[in-house]
Length: 127
Length: 117
Image (cartoon, rainbow over the protein chains, first blue to last red):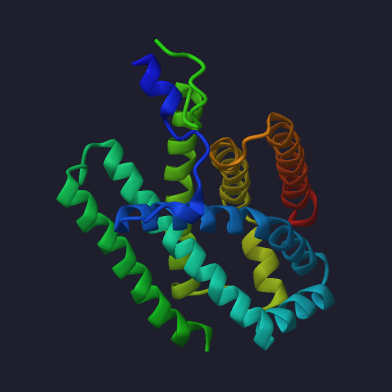
């Protein structure tokens, strides 16, 4: 037990791990989570600008409709979408739903399918 | 029981905070998406009127609180799992905690002052 504990990979080498689909969903959950945290300051700044006065609202509105920002918003939508569905999968796993080997794999594919749907339908919303 | 296993997921408190905040964030996301589809305020007056509402400001306030708590637990897990040097973990955790707290206070100020009708 103690020996085993010493050998367990505390520091994961990301470049040498071949991930199953559940692992892909899980690592994307972390990547999107970090990305969303990093987007917070800009989001709060834009919220403030949009509330200050009509000019500020106009500036934010024009900025969000520019092409680079629409692409960024699209990526943000994908990040929220993935984090949302993968998060729900984690909550269901807590309740022992989809915890079996095959169930967990199916759940992971369902998450990826939902994200694929957002990826396509999001294109229409953004444009 | 192993108390300091070095795992990113120790502590029932953090586990619970992550789940409860996740539930609120999920509900908020669904609500905001429906709002976006069913009718989003499209000019400054409507935007101010909507965000000036007490329940909307409360919902946003709880959103920012949930985000800060959820981000703290999540970022901490990421640091503990992928960063080995203790000083680096510590530095990033302090920066994250300070940054999230600052963002939370900023959001609170916006909701209490700028968004006031």
